[in-house]
Image 1 (spheres, helix red, strand yellow):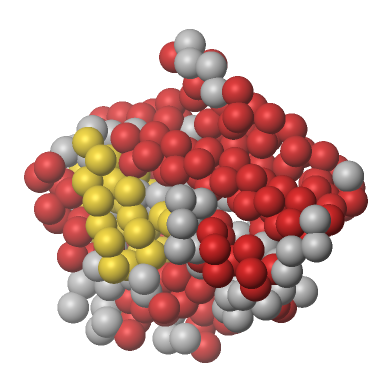
Image 2 (tube, rainbow, N blue to C red):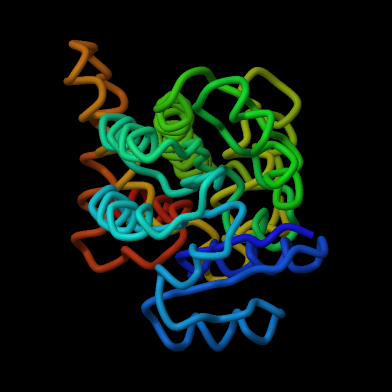
Amino acid sequence: MATIGFIGLGNMGMPMAANLVRAGERVLGFDVLPGSRWASAEHGVQVVASARRSVEDADVVITMLPGSEQVLSVWKDVLPAAKSGALFIDCSTIDVASARVAHALAAERGIGSLDAPVSGGVGGAQAATLTFMVGGSPEVFARGKPVLEFMGKRIVHCGDGGNGQAAKICNNLILGASMIAVSEAFVLGEKLGLSHQALFDVASASSGQCWSLTSYCPVPGPVPASPANNGYKAGFTAALMLKDLKLAQQAAQSVGVQTALGAHAEEIYQSFVQQGHSGMDFSAIVTLVRGH
């Protein structure tokens, strides 16, 4: 049994930590929100009084936090408290540059580190079917992979430190743009008198097939498990999609790459969030398309 410190027990972190408990690991968890601490304790997480306390006895430390600022602040705070030989894994989605700063902070302390953002949403976190996109040295990846396998079904080593974040933002650029395209197609189909099911049956078996259509269809009916059949209750919020599209644009600008579709997708999600829909599932973007 390993001792794992888990900092950030929110919608994603809590079920991830719970899966580690179910795998037989000892999990010392901390979150700034009392509700998240209470919910995690009900799943067997040993809640501690501070982020530092979660790290002191940990063989592995996992962070799942809202953004770059929080990750760097927490790592700066807790790294001095980590024991020799600990491994730090950040599963947050942050910008590539900040991820590389985090790796450098760990290296200064002689501590191995991985950036390992996830794909799969809350459902994937609950079912332990997440995909982890991992950046770090091959040796450190080999140490971290068995822990990540308790929380996910696909663990992909993407290269050196920061490359996990690079893979995540590239993936979500595709996801954000494809969800808008699928939504536009369904709205166009509606106006042309085409039923949702007919379009789904054609596109899902043809060249229009994509994850946004077959797994997360933005209209009610064709995919029973999609948020469209549950009032667009979020598995992955519009606000988080906007965050990732912004990260993609920042990265593109930093290396001089033009991503016209990604930039337009960011503008569309920005409009949706500004209209007060930040907490809805990102697939609810179909309602914005329909309204226009």
